[in-house]
Length: 298
Image (cartoon, rainbow, N blue to C red):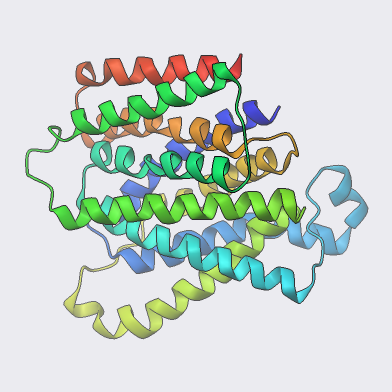
């Protein structure tokens, strides 16, 4: 079940990437981050309200958000800072790069996540699963190389560096997720809601102090419907992902590798909506990703 949930998370994550590109394209980054995170909090809020009003019903339909200690909240704040850093880097990179270039760079996170899963958590995937992971990671490399030629203008190295750093901090966040959900056994909905809540406060503070006073001299902000969809899709993708990772049998190396196959959805969305990339040049890496998924899911 956790493998299937990881695959479902990849689907939602790909749709989230496409919505994110539509929200941030030629738009001010920090207000987009704030309002998309705030919309995610609003989407997750009914579960918290239900837990307070009718905890038995919330338990029955698996939407219970318990009350936790102050020390647990401190751990969630650390996660919020880590995720917030990764998102700032990835949003700026995504704003200035084609989605068909940015998504493969962001998808290098499994390289670092797999390394952490093996060294820190002692995970040992089976032979078939190892072959599947290697196929998927190799496909990412091929995909990234073929995507360099998609954009008519050469991408500035700074935005490529931003996307790589976003991948590294994202991998750190994934390792921290396993620690919170498996080792500390914190419920997924609690982690999801409160990390979004604290993150919205962080981004709101940045908007008020740094962006708002200088808004006339920077890229103007336009509220788009895509911003709400970013929040809604984020809740769906992360809820499914955290539920999968909270399973004691779930391996972070596999969950992370499967989840980053969202690059398939991102590319199709980028091609259809933003006219980026060419399908023929991606057939080989696409085949590698699908073959790797099949081996992992067997």
